[in-house]
Image (cartoon, rainbow over all chains, first blue to last red; front, side, top):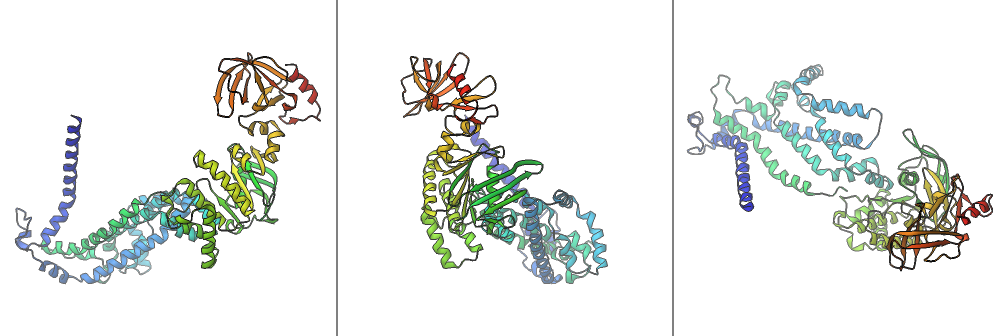
Amino acid sequence: MYKKKQKIAGFIGVIAKILICLIFLFPFLWMISISLQTATESSRAPITFIPASPQWQNFVTAWNMAPFGLYLKNSIIIIFSIVILQSLVMVPAAYAFAKFKFKGRGFLFGLVLVAFMMPVQVTFLPVYYMMGDWRLVNTLIPQILPHMTNAFGIFLLRQYFMQVPDELLEAARLDNASELKILGKIMLPMSKPAISAIALLSFVGHWNDYFWPLMMTRADAVRPLTVGIAALKDAEGNNNWNVIMAGNMFLVMPLVLIYIFASKFIINSFTYSGIK
Amino acid sequence: MASIEFKNVTKQFDKTVVIKDLDLKIEDGSFTVLVGPSGCGKTTLLRMIAGIGPQTSGEVLVGDQDVTDIEPGKRGVAMVFQNYAIYPTMTVRDNIEFGLKNQKIPKEERERRVKEACEKVGMTEYLDRKPGTLSGGQRQRIALARAIVKNPSVFLMDEPLSNLDAKLRVQMRVELIELHKKLKTTFVYVTHDQVEAMSMADTIVLMNQGKIQQMASPSVMYKDPDNLFTARFIGSPAMNVKAFEDGSCFGFRPEAAIMSKEKEDGWFKMQGTIAAREMLGSETLYTIRNEQQDTFVVKSGDDSHGVDETVWIHVPREKIYIFGKDEMRIRQQDDGYETYMGKVGAM
């Protein structure tokens, strides 16, 4: 009887997992489907799920409608600058907050938490004016510089660093290691999972950022993919959804590729255990 | 090789004074064990020598040089920690080599020294393993090798054996004694376990509440304690103590008492019943209680007595220790010794 119950529970579990996967996958699959349909198929009711014949030329049309090469380049410059700069700020900051006692530590860490809770909509206007004063609006810089700090990352990494036993750092100091060396040779290798998770979250978040670059730019030359794809929409509402979805594929594919590559790395780094 | 000296050292954590105006000299080449109950300040002293928990005031000298302003890595000391503090992401070799690399020692010399250190602790075949795959004993050996490889003038050890199981601990104890003999360097070893202190030290420094209670060789510690704290702390089971009405007291070691069914000769005599009996193999511990509810432990080679048996215990005069109201020892040449002895004999 008990065995039977267990079997049923397991079966329900599998069904639930499949359902959840479908709910998450559906918009994505639908986007792929539309990107391969003709214009008529994509605006017809009832909805077409499987295109009659895949329209691969949609991708060519979309690519030629706007300077996607340029957008892609901008997106890549912006995202790598952000992730690298964030790491450069986050790692030493988290180390200091986790392992050093200094005057004002509590207050400063409080500021980090406040920054973490502050929505973008509150800060974009002052930042916009500031960038305006510096004559930097409509360049790549306002899309990078304000995102240099990752308050959430500092917070998360600090928690992680705090678990590293103090004796390890003391042993390293007795081994004549500089603080930079302790950070690079002991703290960082031990925190790989945390750092890669934070970097990945930040990567996805800023790659998909739409509002901020839209506010900070006017010219194609400095716009990222997200803003560029939105420009595929027709001002009068005659949208060729198949072409827009093909454009969206340009945005999503790099993320999917990175995820396929990075997920293995992340899972590997998570399986590493034994901090103590 | 170096001696260590504390001069008028005080340590405060926030507002709490842990150690006040302490003076101590640890001889060059000695195996000195700092022992005491937890919170007595022994680890604090060790961390001062290492420089990872500097003193609030006073001087710490390593090899006649004041090291107050010298970084931990440049003091010529090496430390072994209770939880090993092995760098988990490095291989055994990298762990041992790390300090040498930081000192910019050339590669060939590094390799030679790593090999030598590994041979001393018997870990040569594990050089390319990660610490996660090793047992506690093996990790502690790596920690030892990491200390040895630096050729330090002082070895500091903070309860290095307390995370090991009992059998391995006894084995490592012997290995450490042999290592000290081989290296001839100053060893400063912290433990709360008086058995460890007695078996390894050539000098024991017994501490309590930030103060040195007594500093002496293990046999002097045991046979000639300066005060009640030392008498009670050193030796297992602890010394039997009975107080006089005025707050002073006398004591005797469990093995000093002679037990028999009939009343015999002895300076201190008492009749009681056996409340508990612990057979340890070569000897047996009896807990004996009299009508006044005084409890004494007797260690005896005779295991023929059973629980609830009524017995007599006798202690010869020369095995009795007297302590004053201030808990300081009253020795034979001191005032009052004969008076107190008389009281014991009249009991």
